[in-house]
Length: 149
Image (cartoon, rainbow, N blue to C red; front, side, top):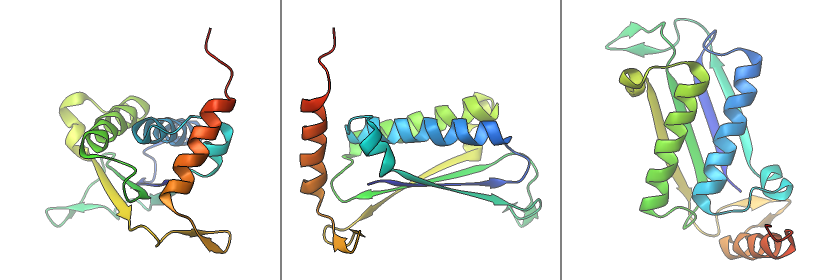
């Protein structure tokens, strides 16, 4: 049940690029969590896009007009180990660079923040969702998937 927040200044992406970025980040986060990339797990991976008005992003106290991105991934506690978190940060940065056309030397314009929600503190559908429930659902999805040829 990850949540992704993408924040950037207006004009940094077209509508098509925004969809491509949301899709790429969804795939990257599911891969980092080792969750199956299925319709069910995509349906519980929500992405919120925050396009800020021009001049609303500052660095050193001055407005920045070059595309800058803040990606925030919120996951249940235990979903990402340190190694998996590092994988996600690297892949999310690559996806943003590719979609937004940001050169590798400008990758510091992309920040990726990972947040964990403590066990017992994530609710959906009127009830608390436990991480082990998601692990069980992932196992069921894997067992139901057709065998790779």
